[in-house]
Image (tube, rainbow, N blue to C red; front, side, top):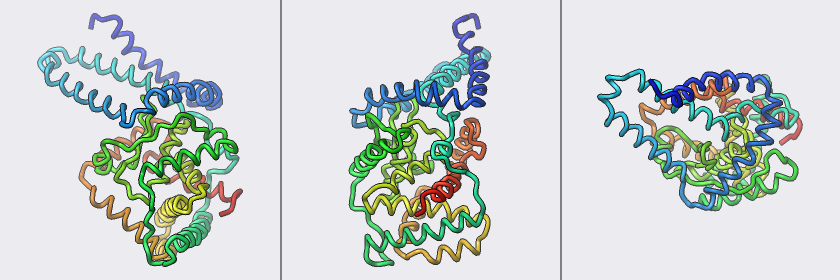
Length: 355
């Protein structure tokens, strides 16, 4: 324990936590000086640095760090057992460095002004308003499915590969940046995860590596869902950390696309969240609404259900519980359920901008 430098780093974790908590109660400061000040410069630097590389640098770094940590514990097990306080101090040093770096390069975006304020929309709804939006989305998704297939029973088959979907997503962000400057996306860095099989088993559609600002999408995700997931991950890159907000951004960007397959992806995605909200409160109403959906749309939903079922495993709930705890520690009191909070934002948005 006689290493002053390590001791100082370990102790610094506690004032860091206090500072971040204070910033969390002052979103205007975070918005002005971090989300619109420091963060764009940091994120663009990393996207320039790593964006040209066709594979994920961040995933390689993660793999090396995990390997190094396991090797450290195995090779130094005797020393750990004889000097547990030194080991504990070293763990806190690592946590302190991680916490500081995470918040500096991305994490403080959890505490910025909400996207509802940027759009000047409300984010509280009634059950009837969710039902009303569900009914409008059913009409929308049925219309799009019929437009694509000409047969209400035919499943939509998106004709683009995943790289083409990435390019179309990036182009849509570029188009929208004029009217929505807070979604400006420069120096794209959107990649398929090298660990897509693992992501599937963990129930992950995509994620942002905050330390390299590389956005990853699970390459095994059914293609009809791929556009909105891609747009969601770019939403993280442009500086929105909360999952309900990036879900909303992913939906909005994809729905604004001129391409009918992208609009179908967005409408089907939004409808699934709305129906989930209805089902939690009124099973009978959910059944009534679901029966109004075209058979082709339901076939796409079954495709997604079968995909999730294929990778179901006992460890997925454990991972989701850990991730939920992480979200709760970062201004998302509903944990993993915050993903479904997109419904409130959609109701507020479509109140001003009807479908």
